[in-house]
Image (cartoon, rainbow, N blue to C red; front, side, top):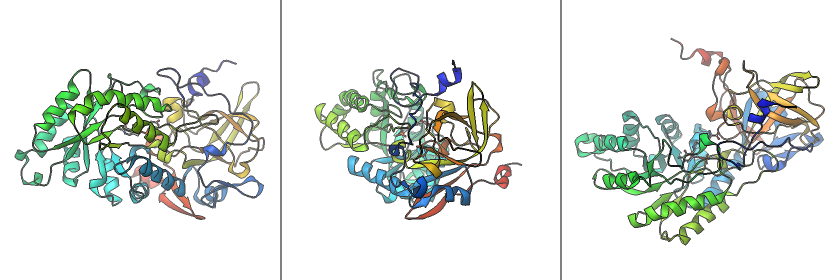
Length: 458
Ligand code: LLP
């Protein structure tokens, strides 16, 4: 049966051709692969699934749905892996998922935090993260954002354009007045290495044709470093590059280092940040390198191209820290069987809590937390409650035979770029977020209510 929607959407992670996600096959009929679940996920009596010692169906009954559930032990483990692999300076990319609890968890575990807007900066500071442990990004930082970053005294400022250099000279230079006394920000210059990571074109950033950073081959990067070095108000400490997101091949990062080295080594700078981008498996059959493998590939590559061992080589993982730690719980509201066509299972969320299937054609899986060990022979399409035919959560899902209206349905690996990209489309309130650990839960972001939907109305 030809299904144009599926052709566009059923895709997932490993990319073998440019600009499009490869279509993932329908998962097999077995139970959900435990590799897609948070690390403390356990099967209980009758196949009921708990995470952090908390039964997921009970949690949904108590707190309502949709609900983002994060395994705190898993989050901590990934932060520790990152610090262990990369050393001091590795930053958690907060765009993947940010709230005060997440910011302080990453900080407690020794990570720096990458923020890319005044909003992310505000939340990180509100969580008590010391400004010196923040890396401030952005391809179009406003005067107000730059001033806030400078006043806060962020640890690293990543410079992205000549306009920003002009702005910085104005705001941080001697003419900026007494408020600038304490400002001599440490800056990284963001460069575009011209490396094409094998990933979706919307999340690919390292190529020359990019809105981010300074081109290497055009000479723009060299000019940026020169201009910043001649300006007494800042300290140029290194280079930054980011080749893309959901990258499965560590070879792309080795290639990045190789390209950067030619430019970096003669500059004699102490730091090199290779950005984020390590991919994670979203559906069974995919596999991704570990954070440690990613770091050691980069480190080996640095050595082989002659980057001095004294260089602080860092990274900014987002997805690899939070994606698999999180899952979403929905309630099934309707099951619509269209004979000879397909079965639609509609849940109480959708593109407002997970726009990734619609935006990037990302694939997910689904399972029933009340029967997590059950085979999943039924092929269905999981859809949301929004007024759009494209509002798909899992284009090609397999679920247990017993699935029925009223069930709690879970989609694993929704911890990254789900809540952080959630919207109020159709005035659907954003879900709550809970952290679970040691048999207890804590609500770290409350569910929006009707009043929240009117909060900004004049
Ligand atoms: N550093 C920089 C400069 C970035 O732009 C990003 C992501 C990261 C680090 C973190 O990348 P990660 O390790 O999470 O791959 N919304 C898309 C992903 C966009 C990523 C944007 N930049 C998605 O849902 O797949």
